[in-house]
Image (cartoon, rainbow, N blue to C red; front, side, top):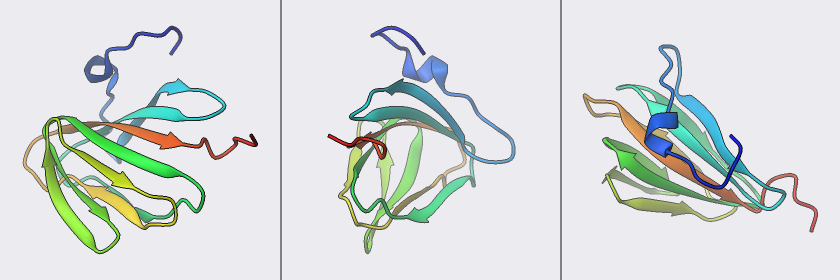
Length: 111
């Protein structure tokens, strides 16, 4: 998406088979995606060795796991997964959820 202003809620795109992921913004240093999860959809646990990730719930609620901790986050709540820490998502609610997801530095950043 071009330009400096975005409507993250409107940009979210749900998919029937897996979580929807749309790039909202990307630079050489970071990126921001919009995730759209139907009930039961997940992002399995994974690790980014050299990048921090931030999950911010903008609609609905979602279970976020960071390391050994797991919490249900609602609208306006944020979780931070430091580099090297396992993290993942599960929409274990009965309603759709939308999140902003930031990661920095961008995996391709060489600065």
